[in-house]
Image (tube, rainbow, N blue to C red):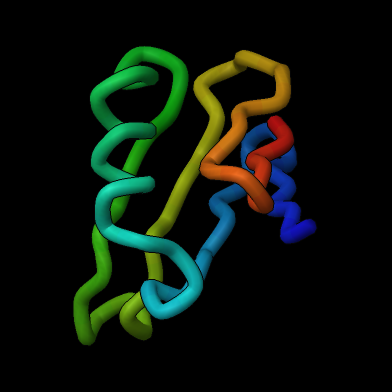
Length: 69
């Protein structure tokens, strides 16, 4: 099982190749108030950038992937 951990007040950089676009768009649609999003670009090394806005929990990102906040 793949697990990504967000630490409060820190930005987690997740390479775009590690997540499906659909997973990220679903996450963005479901948690717009809970998470800040940055999308892949040459300026951030083609990584998704996620940051918690003070929330904690575990979010499933598919059958074998979770996001722990």
